[in-house]
Image 1 (tube, rainbow, N blue to C red):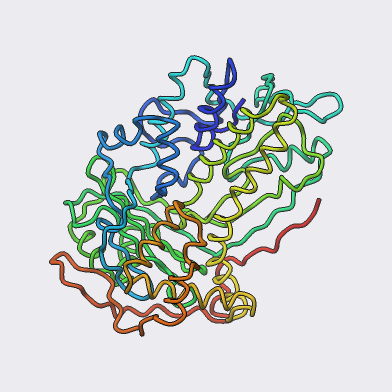
Image 2: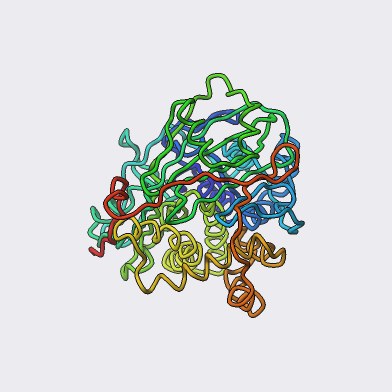
Length: 473
């Protein structure tokens, strides 16, 4: 039994179908018969990133998926050559990186996966079936099924919670007498808003304009997706949120001073009826399920149910895929199904650890600048190194390639502190000159003089604060 038909739920269903005679996928909303928005997933209307590692693992689980997405119109390209990337130090020069990226809407990806999953004879899908609780053995040590909103009970030999960021699992555990899991929340006060456009092709298939604490709270992600359309998401951290009306949205985008983005939007026509969609629930949230000593048998949580990441970093879908694969590997090596859940939950926690540290390092900086106007002593060396590294990304192709390989989760973050990169960060960082932010439509680099106020003290406290970890349970 799998709860939730998102990326984590679909990949878990695919993995379980290799090992069980029947797998039931339960989804609370309506699953569209074609590529389209899924109920209850407001973040699906925004730009999504699938790092190269996640794409590679999906291709292993669903052979031919990449070609299918390409045939549907999703561009496939070398990230270093076909992405316009701007960081606080300026425009990153284009260079072949050897890292393949593909742009598509989440609707297309989910539909492609869902169609393949439901074609498997072992799989049964139940949409419009909200799960309201778990069913337990008499001694409440083992999960034996789920209860639906209408009172129907579905028995299961194994239950996988992949219901996402708004999972009710902590509540269900408490109801059964288990401790509430400790939760860690790191909130950068970030929100984003997305428009979909028709526009002519450009010299890039993706655009990244990265924000940076504490001076540059605003940024943007733009991708060229299927159907020749462009999906553009602008965002702001520290409570500096983008408007959701067209004029305000365009003005917000214009403050970035990004010539590539300005040229694209100047020739773009909003898709009729698409509207502008905002989203504010972007906090990083991690539950310490693996730390619960008496974990129930036959229950595994994966994906955003365990750790939901700030979407700006684009890690969530890949982490979900890796966790589903880890569940399959745990099942393959187990003789007793009762022993699977705890082992799998520990592997899920291990997979989360590194992406979590990558995501919260920047968001912690936003929190501390907003609350205190400065960084704590323990975070200053990390931030010093990171800023010097980003300056090198603009000036050094080798460092840029290493950075992209880590961004795409192909290599460990240790690649950014290896001897060669470490020496360059410490001794060869160039001085900052005029900040180059884009090439412009004519290919000539342009400089930005846009100034965004720095978040300091009381002026910064209008945004949402980082909530302290709840250590109860």
